[in-house]
Length: 490
Ligand SMILES: Cc1ncc(COP(=O)(O)O)c(C=O)c1O
Image 1 (cartoon, helix red, strand yellow):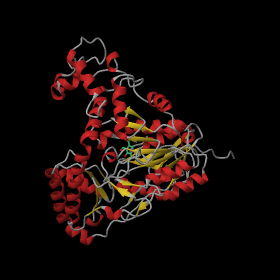
Image 2 (cartoon, protein in one colour; image 1 turned 135 degrees about the vertical axis):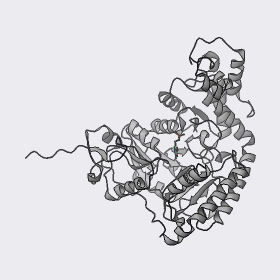
Image 3 (cartoon, protein in one colour; image 1 turned 30 degrees about the vertical axis):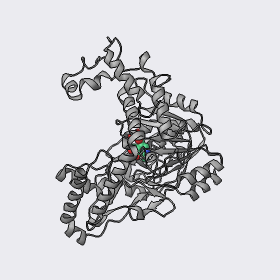
Image 4 (tube, protein in one colour; image 1 turned 45 degrees about the horizontal axis):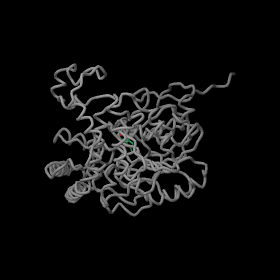
């Protein structure tokens, strides 16, 4: 089959065109049974292919027909031996990767700034995380990837690890020397699992960091929906056969996946793959040029800094994705969160994320010069408004959380007997819940860690500026669940 074909989408269209009389789910039956307002908004076309795994439409849990053909084309396009479609985002694909290599008490080497799905998989599987400190960028107040040296050291200390998980590129578009990391891990015969949530497009243009499959990694969970042009929630899991078994991956992804898979999402993966494979290079070229123009103009604005290739050269900053605009706003004397709010309220602009010191904007083939200039001009106006503040206020101090010590495995802590205590009084106790700032969903605490004063302070700081701290059962974070302690009987 050719990359210009879309077996899954075309198969669905052909089926819908036959207009069969449906006595199967979904009960809205081509939209006739759905709320009329919703139907008229979303359209009959979309509803006509909101179908289910009946015979002619194959089954994601055991693909042999049009889904298999679509997955095979995706594998060819992404340079994998096998591609699995995920309707549960990259989170589902990441959980599959971890559970495909780890069982209870198996070690897995992971950077601390992992997405929460990695930690969920560690709790589900009973694996023991061996954390690597990501490189911290003190100037920007963000974490980058992990270094080759740290991977080598971790593998020497833990040669029995069942996998090394790498985030490549990071949310901010920075990538490590993945090829070297793969070489190191493979020399210890350990598979490399890549969280490629922010890299669906990188395989298709030489000016972007190497993709997981290009670097020789064993598995990669890739959010096609984020930067590859498919619908939200649709991702892929790419596998290179050898150190991991595609059959095991199929059975685990199936265990974690709904039996009612959305064909709209699946079809959108099929068409996104076609576009990336056949037009990706050209579209990404235009996107890079647009983003570089924006970067240049933003850097001409006083007190703003948009990160560019000068960031490269440290041990963890081997390459970067220029379509990501990391805009440091700390010299304006306001937080990234305030900038996000200002852009929303004043210019109806929504950014990808903000933190204490930065905002992050993504540029894709969906953007044109018009949108680019709306953002650039808004930032110029903001800088003018902040002029007096930037001069008066001390630049914000960059604060990053330390990695706390792990006293229990995350799974043991998660299932242990617990009690709820005041957040303020929790220093020194072992936490039984996750605490993270979302986005980007990076844990400050994971179950089993010892609560420290510095980390409590970091959480306070985030709450103070209104950043979304999530995870605990008490969403106001006044109380926290910790492992129960028994006092000695007098
Ligand atoms: C680094 C990273 N990994 C994984 C994910 C999960 O991806 P998804 O939202 O497709 O489940 C995200 C989502 O933001 C992420 O930032």
